[in-house]
Length: 146
Image 1 (cartoon, rainbow, N blue to C red):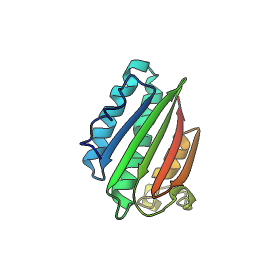
Image 2 (cartoon, rainbow, N blue to C red):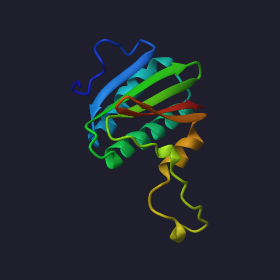
Image 3 (cartoon, rainbow, N blue to C red):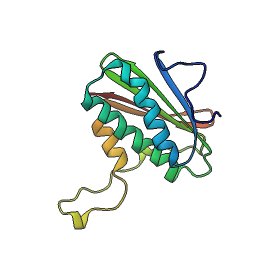
Image 4 (cartoon, rainbow, N blue to C red):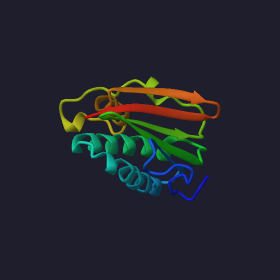
């Protein structure tokens, strides 16, 4: 694991972005800023960048808040035409958040349940989302379009 900087073997100008971080809330901002720096030269639409930021925030904050015994998380991204393929991995116990039932819908704010809205939001903002278990790591991959 490195100190949170972009992998020295890959520059921000290469096609794939990779960042290895500790499981800590500070990693959200570190990852967000590094990812925005990587995406900047591509001059993507503001709407796409906003979606990438929201999906990244939801995925990383889910790891930080819920991945018990996880110590490391990694962010990968790749621009594919006018879309961004975003992946977040962690080294916690196997858990597929996409298999969880969606929270009940509500019509009044007083009826809304706290929590559980992140994965449905990721699904709405992404063209596709999938979970993979790779050896000892959880991996969520989202294809985000503008």
